[in-house]
Length: 148
Image (tube, rainbow, N blue to C red; front, side, top):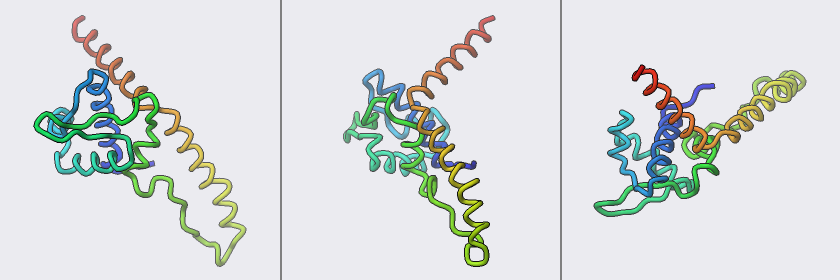
């Protein structure tokens, strides 16, 4: 499976926003852009899509920014990716239905439908909180190794 840059950046940005939201802070697109090395313009598009889907909320003003609209433990990777990936769970077009409905049905039932369910199960089983905790553990382990 190949996700677009929008999908990958959305997950990365949400992890960072979750970290700041837990501290009660608002996060600017510029600060995320600088911290993660993501184009500010591109990240703004991602943030707008996440806000439109109800994952983020924004506060305007000089000290404004974004924060999670819900707790990180209830926002799944599926929620985030569905907000920015237009074709994530889109059904495949028919391939050979006109010439061979049996082959088309076999492919759909035995491959495409199973693949869709597996992707949905995987992505709905991972929350932004899970990703944040994993990233924090990785940071701790790397810091420990550097101090040795």
